Length: 152
Figure 1: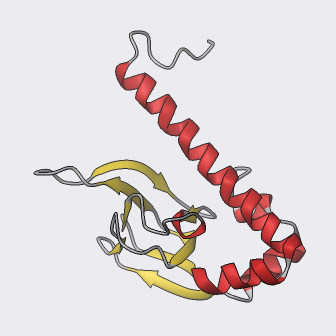
Figure 2: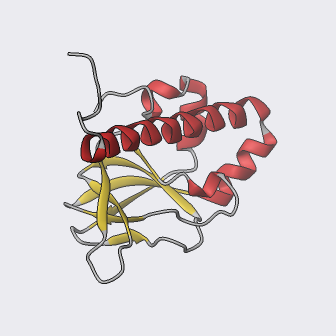
Figure 3: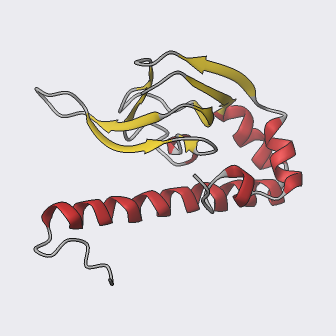
């Protein structure tokens, strides 16, 4: 997916390089849970390959998939905002390769370098805004009498 919210497009090269110094490569088998709703948010990932489903706990049912993320997309933003707990769950839908970041290390680096911290905050805020907008459109498609109301 090419989006203004991917790390490549959202961060200047100097900030990407600084962030990537904190990265480690990880992989997840299909079906692996990355995190659960309500648990401490202490990591974040950028998908290199594969797909990750963000889901919401529904009592008595399987989790409801809210969004599917792929190449270049940020998985997890809850580490950036109090109360620092996951708002959703996440599961690898296929084999996933990703860069993983320790949230505390990222936050420490942000605190040490205000320009870097602002770039990360603007990026993460953009991700949150884009996902809220996408959720709004999906809800309108499901529940509004005439769909999302987009112009034809």
